[in-house]
Image (cartoon, rainbow, N blue to C red):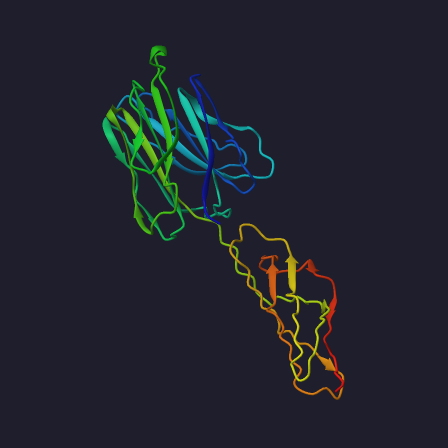
Length: 340
């Protein structure tokens, strides 16, 4: 199944406390992969902050810095496979109070649901004034994988957008609380909007003027396994054909007539996302023709081509036929003997 983007949702807070929130995106379905990024300003000359994982989520990595500069930031990545019923949000805690804080949750469909949802993933950080940051380099061995990048910066102003050398920006979240004595966060997520080639991959985030610090995360999403082709035999029984033929014989001409073209429809339940045509062979059609002795000459009849419109189950354990039409019928041909 091909990967597709679903939606995103963001949250931010300028309250100096130790709690944070992850918000469920719209239109999430069971089996979707949810990727969350939490970012926050981690205090003047601060060290890495402890991030506790919300219930039901798995922490992928912390991207931290121990900065001698006055604006260090931190990013934590989580993942979750959506179930049939999900809450509107999840709550988590930090090891201490931080301000400001922001998070984004992005949903993708068609991603592997097992532990290996990423072909590869890695983080990078810039703990100094700069205008760009290269992500780590990751290697792709799956030609159907998607590339995802999430980046953020901390600065004294959010006047300059965070950009990325990725194909598509899915959205951003930013706010400037400089008037309250706090610092600015800008958080954005991007992706390749399609499969990427195998080999090494790296992107770059940046802005027009220097930030104080920045973090970036890159990942290659592993697509779910395709549905294997159906195996085994496809069995379907065509009923006898029903029809009548009337014709006149003029000795010694050949008796001729036309048989109606029989059709058959097979109904089944397709297993999404199977696509394309389903091929099924129909057995040869035979007929027994009777004449009245002592008729002279050859008795000839031509059967029309037999066609079938087949729709059947394409699940791995083989297709199943649920109905066959038309009703049982029998063909008759009669040779009329002409008296001399």
